[in-house]
Length: 492
Image (cartoon, rainbow, N blue to C red; front, top):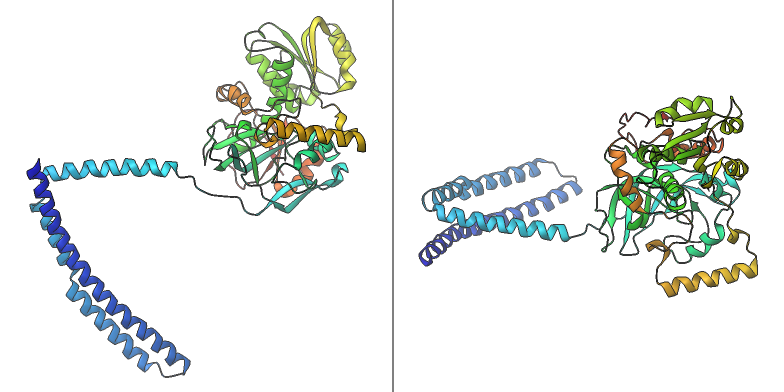
């Protein structure tokens, strides 16, 4: 072994001498060449400045080219190459090749490990496009702006995401009317990415690509496609970039386009909360249960029907006559059209239900109680008025103090996992339903997809209450569209 190492050192020294000699000669030649080029360049500028005839410039260029040819002739790169080739052909043994290969492989592995540990510091631009509410005057306050301050990662568990598509929920219109304004105003004080009460970025869910991650993030990686939902008090997702806690994010199912993935998350959270958390259903207990879903082609209704059918439950739904075919395609066992019949009388002809999902609101509450079994459950998904929105000066001050104490004593800023609402929004729920999406049991229904500059038109469409599924806003151009059966939309 010592003899092998000695031979390797001896030949390495020989190669080093040859390369050192060639490098010294090359450096000297290039230095001379560089000095000549520099002098020629300065003289050329001087000649141009003094409006001299270009004959002198031509002579200098010709002289410089001649010197370049001389340097190349003396240097003879082909001769150096031939010497190196002969050396490796006649002097290098198989042992040297093995030894060098092992060293190269070990060095490559070390470089890959080091590279994987280096985080790329990509950040969003300072300004971005977003769909916002500049006041609480409802639809007239909603607009598209181009100069919203882009968010940045300020906590180790946060993720910066470039939004490709974002969904519009009817709750966004309520936010533009002032829903949650007191809670949002107080929480904005502890959020470095917000400056004051307005503008309020709208949007409850989106899909996109991870641009950067905090140093403590483990759920997703930079460059990964993700989908997510945010609670009502969180800055919205209808913007080019969004920063959220990693707890809200999950890898996007591969079978969904960006538009389809943007149409599901918040509806999944709402349906899951209604069926599982409040209704007590799960894949094991839902089999054989009778479930009534009002407005079955709404964003929440679409998800609820598919979840119950995948779990083996029996689903009845109420829809308009034009949406009846879609309700059957989603898996509803019994479809009642409320615009061609008296659905209350129709329900009287049927057995009562174990669980009724009221996605319409208070107007159907009495009817739901009437058609529910004595031991059944009625769950309403429509957002009720927050008590804090009506607080005056005194009550508002006490509310602010309580929030401040909770913030400081729990040491859990709302952007890193603090929960202030009744609906539990979590990336874990999205991960649980991902296998259902991949198997085709849960599909996205996109009514229409608008470009970002047409977001105001999109909100007007949602406000009419005639959408089937969800309305989506795209923040990327020419997003590939795949045919997923019920995942369809119209371009506007």
